[in-house]
Image 1 (cartoon, helix red, strand yellow):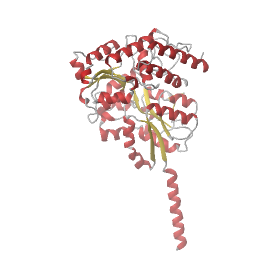
Image 2 (tube, one colour):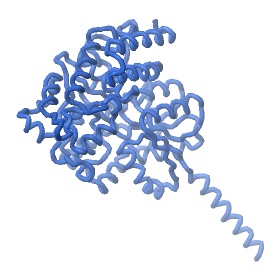
Image 3 (cartoon, helix red, strand yellow):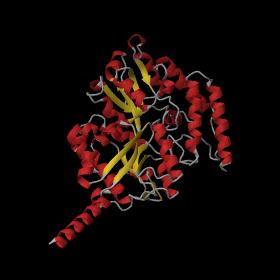
Image 4 (spheres, helix red, strand yellow):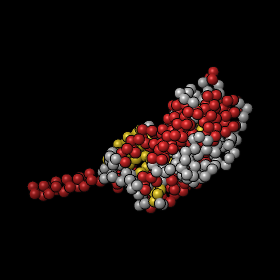
Length: 434
């Protein structure tokens, strides 16, 4: 009898140990955006379904980019899943730094991912990151303030109209800024905004021989227009405002217009968070009549670093977080307006989502963004708010710092552009492009 008990105990211990092998603890690095925070609050659903637990490392956008880039280039192994975007994914996939996502389950239906998102998160036709949400950029504006100014927002306005409307909507006595835009240093913060804006002014980062173009009239026009408009109608300290800072200002009713990521639409229209939720309209990002609008294309996506020892569990998490089932989970708890947008074709065919006031404008913005033809004059790079080359992040971080210094009045626009021209050409020559 005692032998049988020992055998039973041994078998039980073996089963428990086998279970422990499959119940992993995943470490995930992510950005401190609202949709990611919401996902963290729903992680118990993933644990209940799989047994895996999750440890979150939630970081401000600029810090996240630094941490995950350092970790993957040094093979640090700190994360099992990383939140990255369309800039990093093809480069890191090409380098063999990411696990291919070409074997996701049939139930996941990878073919449902919007082509613009799948294309930007692939290398040589292989998906290396799954989009948690996709975005372009568009105008979010106060319909009551626009009406009070005696103006009507066009569906596809010009920058001249935006500057005029911003002046008319500004009310310094009541702490209302006509427009709130990113000025914060960081290639993915203020750098992304001014690059997308410059496209519509006819500017580009490089000519076809990889020569920097910051010494052109188009770049000078872009920065002068931006600074003049923000000085007239923007908030004090805009040089340090990024996505989250402007979101907060808009939700507090302190912005007449905000041009930023389409994903923000759910936050500015959420009555639990936004004091102006019932007074928000939407329009396409502005242009200058040159055939290129100033909207970007991006996805915050989940990828698996090649060195992880928890690949199977990591793929389970990615399938859970970027699936139609997750979208339905969010909708059941917080309504269709709050589901992650811009990633799946079927979402925009869903009659429940079609009722969301910003759904169609988001899709229109995404579909109008073309990373392969982002500039008026030909350019040698792919990308709208970035150039998809490994050197870009470092160069653009420095350039954005010079621009932010000009926004803050610490140097002239001319000096900022001259420094951007020199440092960009120096870096490109050192990298062998010139």
